[in-house]
Image (tube, rainbow, N blue to C red; front, side):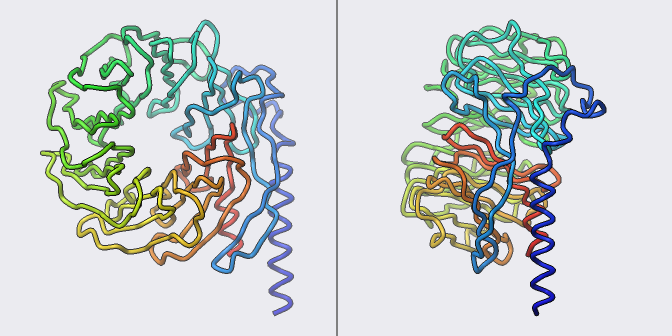
Length: 407
């Protein structure tokens, strides 16, 4: 038993030393990955320590992890963040006019996208599927498509009459959708920058736009509901009716067949993406549902609520599989599944990030470090990193694969 304990401690200490030294080699000459690099040392990510509660017994450990922020941001707040498709880079916009791209493994700044760009706050960003371009939408009413390696503008897409608040690429990278506070969604040809269509008829501003994996459906979300469009024909497919109050969250299944929504009415609902039929009503919460996610195989739905619970249900029957409530002391603001579907992560208003086993419901880890509410959690495609975004102006990469190796 003692040998096992010593071995575990040695493995933990070895991981900590490696994680703390991650920043030391980030300036090597062969590490530019095709980017035209400049010196942004002040904005580089840095290794910081916080507390990790590990496993079902919540054993405490000091845990080094990467923290990203931008000291030059006028108001520090992170407005949008996204991991590149290859899982190597992190892009973020702040309450300012630029986008910063870091290398996740060591915090090196690879690019600042700001030359001749936006002149007002950037609200939303999106990577194209091959990771060579990034789109940004701003309060200046414009969408800019950037070449991430050179930092140069590829297209400036003009026409919205208010703040651009949502962006999404089709999985094939042919179309870029932009949604704005002017209650309009626009579809753009990615190659030429030409406007392909205007999707009008929404009564209030667009909060999210989501494409199905087969590119046959576009979900345009507002606080009042969701409209499904066929992006191939630019025709309205169906409006989803059923919630009795504001809709705060939506997610499409990877299989392109269903959509889940979360509402102020304390319910989550699963809909057919084909005809808008309400398939399942989930009424497990006692507060507004603020976050929703499908498991990668579509079999489960996870929901996070103002009531401080994360609930996991069978997406076809509505049967409750797990209820994570005791660990959360504040509202659940964000939920996400790992790419392999084995883990569920949640961010809450207490600044903590928690991870559970999606099948057994067993607690895996709890990360403490953020000083304000966590509003987004996301895994890299290889599940090596779990990244959280909070209202304290920081983004943190927790090294979830290293954590799992300690169990």
